[in-house]
Each structure stands twice: as C-alpha cells, then as structure tokens.
Length: 89
Ligand SMILES: [Zn+2]
Image (cartoon, rainbow, N blue to C red):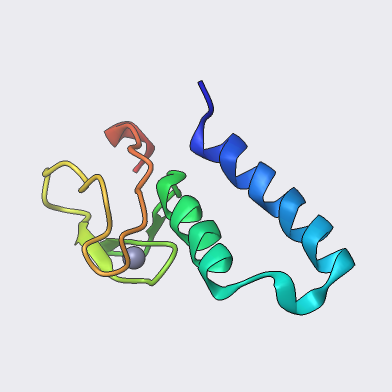
C-alpha cells in the first residue's frame, strides 16, 4: 500500500522531471495535490509556554493545561497533527 509520504515523494520526483522538460507544464492543480498530500503527513505540533500549536499555521490546538486529546487535524489549515504521548509535554 502506498503511504501518503511515498505518494508525496513520488509527486516531488515527477515535479522535477516535468519541470526539467518544461517549467510551465507543472500546473497549479499538480501543486495543489502536493500541498494536500503534505497535510496528510502528521506534523509534530509545537509547544509554547501555555499552548500547543499547529506547526503549519501556528493556530492553537489546545492549551497545555487542558487534558484533552489533540485534534487529529488542525481546524484552521487542515494539517494532520502528530499525536504525542502526554508525557512528552
Ligand atoms: Zn494549522
């Protein structure tokens, strides 16, 4: 089964190949597909003093104090969030 990461790597190789032939042949749609794939690959959130934030768009996911689980996806940018063990906070 192809993972999102493999699909993304494949797309990036294709992009290079296409652009080597013809710069303008890499369409905006193809670029959008790359960005959509990137959002499916879990990204580690980053931590400020009181908040856990999306590394993609810096939106707050939740406060450090609340014991709630992190959302699977950022509600602002749609980035998939890597679920970390509570101990690592
Ligand atoms: Zn985000």
